[in-house]
Image (cartoon, rainbow, N blue to C red; front, side, top):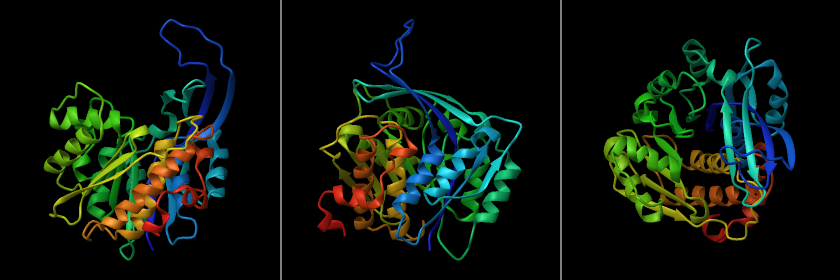
Length: 341
């Protein structure tokens, strides 16, 4: 039975609905204001849990919150996430995200306050990773760039034998120099993050936005400089998603593509990437039994299809955690169901 640990952020999201994203020097009035649960880590844990309903995958979340964020744990638990490894730190405040959502486009703009997410210390991480790890079952670790001590967590988990999936968000210009991504087995990026990683790691700049073709070029070149990499995924919004992967540790590279869900009425794109990651990694963890095993084409294709569909559905409602669709809903909307089930 695969065991998945998300070691990641938990935030309180302050969401402002506006006509259009505010410009420098401008003052605008919000059309609506909502407080919701969020954080990339928490969102991905909930997505993993909902995607794994009816399967043998177990989802656990580790991270730090303040006293003001305890209400979020109940929401995560109701979705099927084990929160027993979450630390409540009374000396700090829970992380915050100030989110503008454009009523016109559904796009968002986000300001993050790390709060308790940056109070994770090396000793805490070592205790949790050691406690969770099991030599008898495949053990997966899902990470994002919103918590502290990643420079310890990734190498330690690598040595313990975790399969490590890293979401490169947020992706500052110093990400490659501060985060040991060479010990990650899976990288999941959106188009801007992929371009940033390419600039930092490959010294490659693109004059135009990423598309399917140059995304594949980036993905394949990453395998030349990241020795542990087995799979790189790039989400491209309306263009869908691309996965570049190696079927074996030294196998030839292959590419899988999935168009975006076509019949989506976009309300809010917040959290769509987190939903993608949850569904993708749930499917992958059931069909791929660790980094020493062969990575099957059908497993990647099924994971990419369900994840892309789930992310599209998530855009049809407001908020991040609350927009994660149930697995049955995703399956009903998935294209070419007969080909993957």
